[in-house]
Length: 86
Image 1 (cartoon, helix red, strand yellow):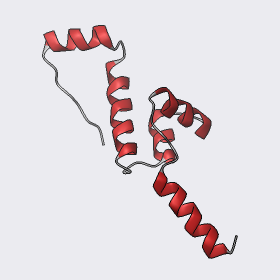
Image 2 (cartoon, rainbow, N blue to C red):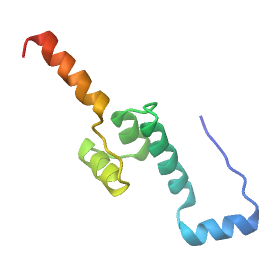
Image 3 (cartoon, one colour):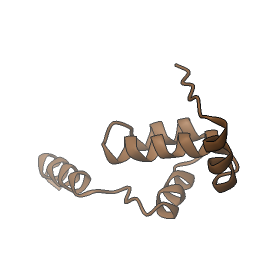
């Protein structure tokens, strides 16, 4: 799917002054919100942003102050450990 955003020239100039690579900024914002909403996985983030490793994804999350291991993840891991008898 391809998404296009049409910005009036005056707004485009302002946002470009703030964020040199506006399309990348929009993509990163989309990815961050998708991850926070638990719609996107860490692997989705890696693929969408073109990262080679999960370490790059974790560094991206850290730079944007987004925890990549959440309480729901801990609860899932605890339940898995319990089922496995660990």
